[in-house]
Image 1 (spheres, rainbow, N blue to C red):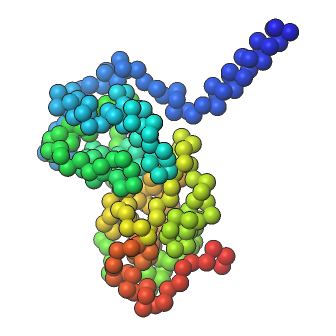
Image 2 (image 1 turned 120 degrees about the vertical axis):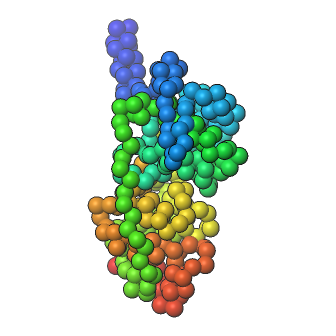
Image 3 (image 1 turned 90 degrees about the vertical axis):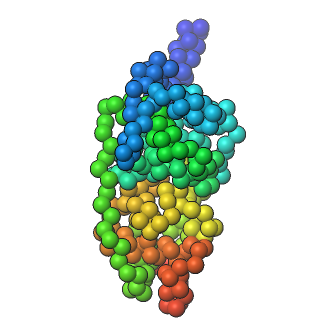
Length: 289
């Protein structure tokens, strides 16, 4: 009886361990991370150093509360951040980043990480870090990189090419609406962009945590930048670690610009695209064509 109980217990333990997220196996030690103290970052004519005293000081003062001593997103503050309203801090050890100029699945460039630190993220606990000088930000980029072995074994992806932005026209706005329907953006973002599509309540990130679709109507900045080029980039690279895929294989560059223009009609901010949609009497897409 005791032997059977022990076998059953071991089986349960094995099932529990095997059901843990794959990311848990990637947990790194202080010694492993310290081996990458010589990590550098290059942005413009500036070189950042992970082992600079300033980088370590800035990370300890401003970043460790959320991202933790090991950069694993388990700082003391993390327990109080409840997704989807308050996304959990990024686990730098995984080397997976939402905002990139590079193709899905590839590492971001140093410039991408620099921009993320400078820009911050609306609808999260990550603020705009404009208290840092440019050199401090580049040093922090190197420090962020040193947490993940991916930055040793892999190179960043090649940034995607964004073609020149065409003129906004009524035909482009209408075509953007058709693309919004065809690639089923409405399933998450809703037919009016209010993040209330039929799949919105089921969304999870790659670690199984609830995540919210972007609400175009509430006036918040898109996480990875608010220019037309930024929005184009978001759905052509995807947001790694989230349900938002890359559409680079599904839509052509011209179609991507049309989608940008249609998304502008859903946003709270005044725009030429909204004026055109109003003149056209453009209706929301129908989920049951």
